[in-house]
Image 1 (tube, rainbow, N blue to C red):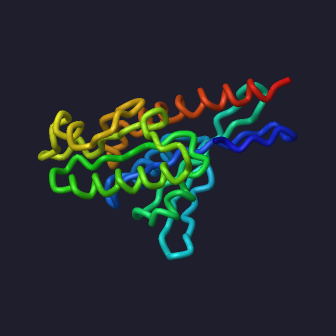
Image 2: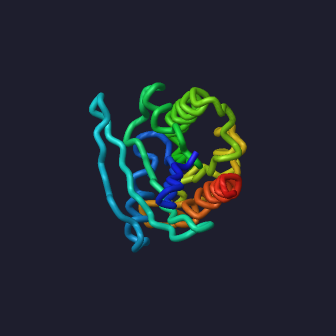
Image 3: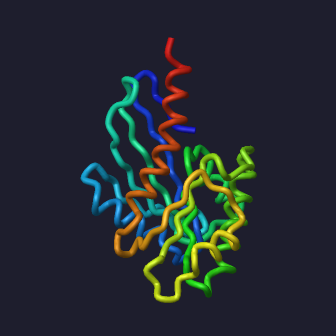
Amino acid sequence: MAFVDRLNREVVAKVVYWGAAGSGKSENLRAIMGASPEATFPLNLPEPDGRWVECIVLRLGELSGYQVSVQLCAPRDLPDPEQGRDLLKGADSVVFVVDSAPAREAENLRALESLRQGVGGNGSGALGPHLVVQYNKRDLEDACPMEVLRAAIPVVPEREVEAAAARGEGTMETLKEALRIALVQLRAELTVGVG
């Protein structure tokens, strides 16, 4: 749920990139920074246990009379369940980054279980309506076929995107899908609050 400051007419939405360590979350954020002049505040935030969360902020412009920004966050490693719930709290959409390398199937499934625990702890439980799945590293010579990945990752996302984030391919398409989900919710939220 986006943070809405009605007095100053500002809104900050949140998109969380989630996946196994090395799946390409950081590469996504770097590609977005490089392609988006409106991207600001590259941050590496330490968590209490020494883990790091990377964040950037995009200024999107105006929606229903509010200045809108979106915070993009990605944990470097899978957080423990409590930290995962904290990071996912208030997320307007989630990008689950799947590593297409055949040897990474177990890590992808651990990351998915971690995501389910984090979302479930926030009372929403279901992943699909706010979830974009990015099948990353599609440029690998031995990348798993898409049918194999879809069968191995048991979720029904709102959207799917194929990507090679290290080359910047598919990163902006993934972001657009995540923002579309977040902005639909945000527009409805702002409309309800008007009056």
